[in-house]
Image 1 (spheres, rainbow, N blue to C red):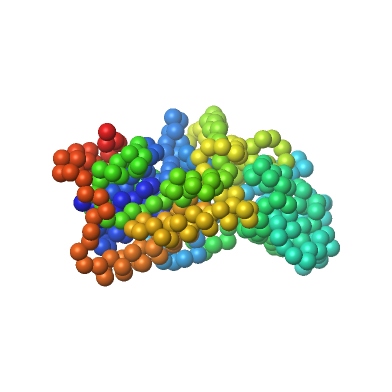
Image 2 (spheres, rainbow, N blue to C red):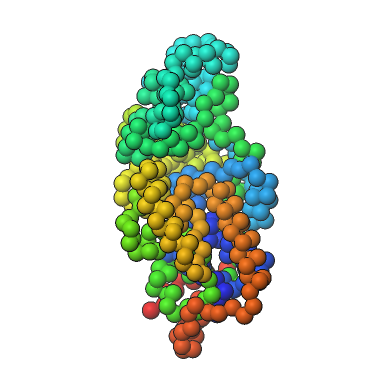
Amino acid sequence: MFDYLVVGAGFAGSVLAERLASQDGAKVLVVEKRPHIAGNAYDHYDDAGILVHKYGPHIFHCNSPEIFAYLSRFTEWRPYQHRVLASVDGQLVPIPINLDTVNCLYGLNLTSFQLEDFFASVAERRERIETSEDVVVSKVGRDLYNKFFRGYTRKQWGLDPSELDAQVTARIPTRTNRDDRYFTDRFQSMPLHGYTRMFERMLDHPNIKVMLNTDYREVEPFIPYREMIYTGPIDAYFDYRHGKLPYRSLEFAFETIDTPNYQPVGTVNYPNDYDYTRITEFKHLTGQEHPKTTIVYEYPRAEGDPYYPVPRAENTERYKRYQALAEVTPNVHFVGRLATYKYYNMDQVVAQALTIFERISTSRRLLTGPVSRNSPPAEVAATVTGAISSNGNGKSDATVP
């Protein structure tokens, strides 16, 4: 008997599994269809011995002391402040747009105060901010919009910024000083030994068992459990009865180069040239010393693993129909990006998971005598128990036939 069946071993599922096991003494089974834990934050050493992020760069940043303290239970940290340059008009200039960006592009020598006037002079007035185009042109004008945002957005989303919700570009600030950090959060660090090591420690508890290479639908009928933590796509859970929720995907092309360094910062954006949107060099992020370096090119795709919910009004309405189904589905908790159809940073997913844990834990303490959702015959239960028997950190690649 498991208290919880957790679908997915990314941030949402792993945080909840750890909290439920360590704080409530619950018995938890984590089922992950990929061959590894850590979700999209998964990192590993490539053939050259360089630590890379399989699903693109993941930069940890947050303003919450509580979230940072929680994750610090499972990792030490390497201080890292992410910087991004954009290849525009044959130059590499800071993004988000700042004082140096404007002075470099236009051959000016403005001060911070003069830059405010400059932005005001080129901004296009909008009575209502409704689209991503509105957000940018109302702040920095048409020319900077075309140089930095329009091409990048069209590649990333397959749509013009005028067709996308304002939230897409509203997340990117515009600065009047020379601050060239991509993030300004209080805590900016990378797990010292990588994300995967952090997840291994998080899931290293005697009450947690992990099944990899396993679709939860294949084993759910045979596993006795009380409640489910579901972190997969919400439309898939309900068999797409209201249609598929659209996502943008990514394709990654890794390349190892026989040189210690390839580019001056961790990430360089290419808003207007080439089919890829950006190149990331991992050694900037990890601090690893190595005679070679590995980079990754990111190519946005319409099909593939779901990465980014497409922020349009009709998609929000479709999600609300699935949300209504989720709210009346007993004993299932929908958590994380895919299950709530929202773009979350890593710290936001952790915060959501911790909040839901408090809610679940409070309800659990009020219950007397839990009732199993599934009660398989004893011989089937014994087979499943054997298949997921603890090995090391409780991981198993077993799939129940």
